[in-house]
Length: 333
Image (cartoon, rainbow, N blue to C red; front, side):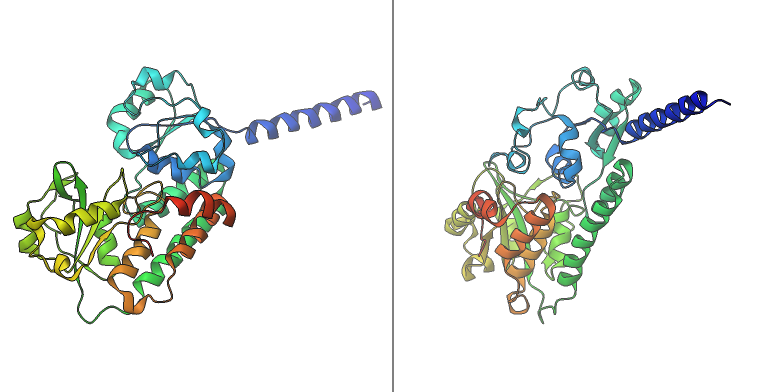
């Protein structure tokens, strides 16, 4: 074999290998959508390498502003299909992969899969789901190290809360969402119920709502439960205001929590910390601080929040104070 032929073969192999590597490392385009896209988006954007891969995303503003525009400037300029948009609308973006909550699998997900699209489903309903789903994201996109780091962060914080010395008498705690139609309690299986138990309280409403969504509760039922502590959620305004309204409502004046002033607006920034968003760990720490103050004196919620936003989203101290902390609502110290 002459030298020219050898050189030609060598050059061909080099070029071929370059194209193979490029093909393997080429970023996959991603579309995020469907109901509860907020939770999906926040976990995907905790992987910095994936942010530029998202080419369209359904609206993630729950009423208190756009968090991900702070994380990834230009986020709001991306196409934003309606969360309830049709299969055809979503298919028009032609991404390499769609990422949805698993609740979208029977409808939107199936329609897209039938058209030949790849769909990843995330449960994101419990701590265990978060560990599993973050692992799946890391494996799919070759970001196992980042996935493991996020999981270990969660596990450290959960372990800290669960190992706290518990009060001699566990408080009866009630979590309610304040709405125009009255107060509502979450289902037994939701993370709000888990948070209370993990933090050392008794979720007093447990057993009353085995369904799959919020259930309205009467003042009479609240009086029968007679909670020691009430945690009040409001997704669209400062939850502290909702807590104050309940405190002033004569319908609830006989409840222990009202009598002792232990009615708190659930902590929030752009989103409330009660829901299964990436912030659920902040919600758990905040709940522990509220219901177990004697054994959480070293926990500084503001510092825990900074650590979280810095670790998950790379937000520095200045941006945290100017863009995040200013949005704090509810009963944050």
